[in-house]
Image 1 (tube, helix red, strand yellow):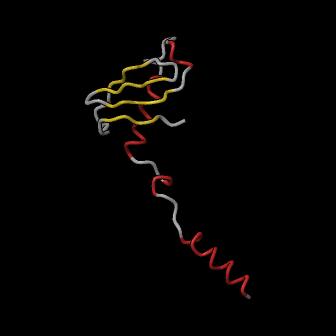
Image 2 (spheres, rainbow, N blue to C red):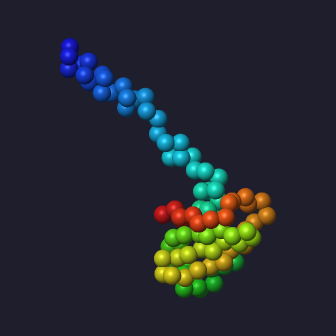
Image 3 (cartoon, rainbow, N blue to C red):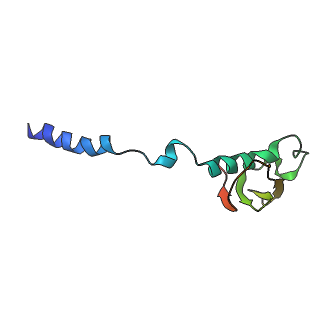
Length: 95
């Protein structure tokens, strides 16, 4: 009986704890940052540049544009779209 009670007491906190809210759904700014990390790979930007085979690492958002940094130390300037609302700052690109 004691073993079952101990097991139940150990299980209750695990069952009642909820995952962190950011693991369920990304924030709006995280989605926009991930979108900005993918923009340089679209046809309008992808013109046999040196960064096309590199992974984006960081995006820094300014007022009207964003700078995407790649793992091979290359950068690409990307204009922000009119409806995009993302605070200025730096964001890590998703892997």
